[in-house]
Amino acid sequence: MDFFELVTSKEAYQIIESNIKLNKKTEQIRVTEGLDRVAACDILTAEDLPAFTKSTMDGYAVQAEDTFGASEEQPQTLDIIGEVEMGVKPELKLKAGQAVEIPTGGMIPDGADSVVMVEKTEAKADEVRVYTSVSPGANIVQKGSDIRQGETVVSADHRLRPQDVGALAGLGIAEIEVYKKPKVGIISTGNELISLDDELKPGQTRDINTYSLASLVERTGAIPVQGGIIEDNAETLKQALVELADEVDFLVISGGSSVGVKDVTYNVLEEVGTTDVLIHGIAIKPGKPTLFTMLDDLPVYGLPGHPVSVMVTFKKFVAPYIKHQMGIEDSPSTVKAEFEQNISSDPGREDYLRVTLQEGESGLVAKPVRGESSLIMTMVEADGLVKVPLAREGLTAGEEVKVELF
Ligand SMILES: Nc1nc2c(c(=O)[nH]1)N[C@H]1C(S)=C(S)[C@@H](COP(=O)(O)OP(=O)(O)OC[C@H]3O[C@@H](n4cnc5c(N)ncnc54)[C@H](O)[C@@H]3O)O[C@H]1N2
Ligand code: MOO
Image (cartoon, rainbow, N blue to C red):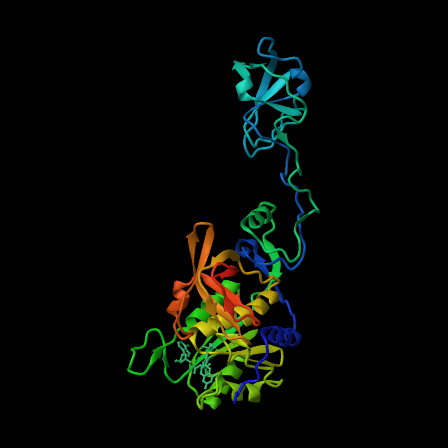
């Protein structure tokens, strides 16, 4: 007899997707906080970059025509009429036969159309000999040649990288509109659980899941909100859940999702949820006793308490939707590897194997880490997960697998 009504992971995704409302909230933030945030709209520049035409070399600003025919043997001599200072608009106006000393990044004075590198010149008092011919525009970067006023710096839905933050800041765009980070409530249930700083008594277990889940939430880019440890009591859990529900966009309960007498999560979700319990078991290993319901617009998950199961189910069934609300596609980084040994798995359940990766003779080799889903060290030792699909009864030594890296 099975107390669960197992759905496949594919069915679970369909159920979750058809119930979670995509509601990407936005907020204005300082560009300095923008790394890894996703632009909620196209961001346009009101300035040109560079904001003025500048020299890309140390040398002399000249009129190119004055240098035509100049060579090592036959230099052209020009009058130095002054010097450009960095960060200052030159008030000089250059005429034919004249040159102005200019540093890299200096503003090109009116009348000049090119720069001769200092190495190709020789200055004596207020004259400079030019030993090369330059064409108009040589060693100059034009105003707006990086980006012009009114153009798009980054498009909507783009996740900001360091270069994007630099470009926006360089254009004086101090405030940007991005998708808001969802808040994810985390409740750990279990009479046996104690907090990190409590003294461990016989029979008690230190809380792991609050901390691994909060770290996973941060990894997705969202904000963890800790609901603490709640005893295995329906009333207490209900109260904690309802309190937290008001301030979060997702709610995750760890533990109590199975069918023991003290496993109250199902009953609480059934009572509190505004839909039925929509998922009551998924055909995966680890993670079978996974629960899902909605409380109005709030997705509420009951994840299995074993420390491996809670992490795997979070990564598979919670993280992608949190990312979605932030405009981020869930694309875990993966590598291909050769599976090291034959391994069997239950048909009818999708299996997530923890594996280590080692450099082999012809590429990476994935080796399974043996051990139950109750053992957190199997995750600590592992480098990633390998999926054994529902229809397969195992993997064979030498076959190519895709490893989802942690
Ligand atoms: N008769 C059955 N028993 C179990 C089944 C089943 O199908 N039939 N499924 C097993 C599977 S698979 C899993 S996974 C667990 C999930 O159980 P619960 O979600 O009810 O989790 P708990 O019973 O609360 O805890 C299980 C285990 O994990 C420890 N735990 C829980 N929370 C934490 C935490 N925050 N930090 C560290 N460790 C935690 C807890 O102490 C237990 O040892 O059910 C199986 N049973
Ligand atoms: O889901 Mo249990 O996670 O198979 O250990």
